[in-house]
Length: 499
Image (cartoon, rainbow, N blue to C red; front, side):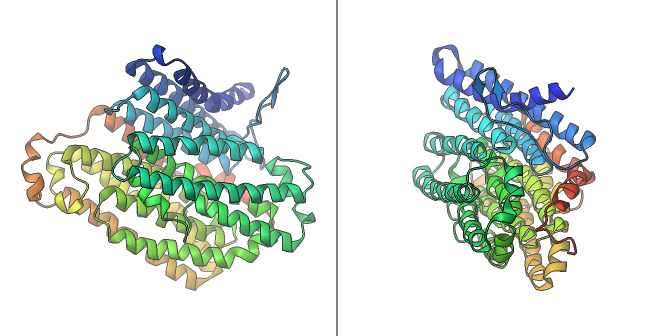
């Protein structure tokens, strides 16, 4: 059984990459229909791998450290080593779930040049799976770059209005963030004398690193990785980028790829740089509060449906950073829980927003209204996605936010109180969006179209149900993540167990 799980871990990463390479090298062999079938096959393998390994880790592996470690060699060939621990297993599962749902959604959509579209989508999928499965910090970084590059190209080829400017801005910010992050990663390796690139081994060497070096290296990583996660003030690339990106790529980037920066901070920076982490926590909390409150207020001012949810994604990342700033098991564990829940809910909201626009021909919420009469199932899914996003009990996001607020209250009641305003702000813009789009009477721009509007198809319901089911599963059984997270994070010395 262990050998099979290791095989599935490799397959989850390499099969979508192989599908992408095959479609890129053999254009004459892949018609639009074959391209969709191949993409669905690649995404299905990653999806199955994610569910099997998440389930195996959840029910069979109760200790700390990495499980299902694959061999980095096969004969004379060298390969990246993969394994999962309590921090990476839920994000690996998130990548598989969102990836499969995004491919299903793309497969039932009208796309120009589907072979090329799915080539980039599969390459991004493989990169995401590899980024969260790698145990070597350099390979972790490389797989992130594999997943990042297709987004820029897809935005230019299939994006919406303003796509070229948005792609350029995203490229500048994220390239800068990635380069600064690489400098921080290499700085750690230099200070440790390049003894190892394995994440777990680097953490054990942290006691030998001077406090001043820890301060500067953690600051470099925070700047670089914070840019990738859209931490204030380097967040402006995200709303415009997601609003202009094709729906499936926006789902994968906002739902999964943007979590990479936070993941590296949790997996590498906090264990390896405990003194630097403690020194920077106040700055993290201050910047995160700006994300939660200021960007939340900017989100309230939006009228474009997709742009509003793009800004909301930035705001919610501030809440994850607040969990890290709490310096406790509950805070960091809550951040991982919220990353998982937010990834599912924002992907679902982007998907359903695309369905709304396809049916109404409008992005402006003021030009909508009354859509529940023609599309009640779409309205129900949209309401559930909004409820999940604002942290309603019963969804995964609730447990993440609750854990973060408990940790913040023990750490700083003042910060906790300020952060709580984010709940009110997100509830206002989320519920108002639902009311404007689905409730009341149709606007004059929409009233003449209502007769031709139908509900979402069975395939669209299936794609949405995958994301909603995962949100509800963790919402009703948070132990699927927390049982192993508690043990893993409790072993990190820099997380104060008294908080």
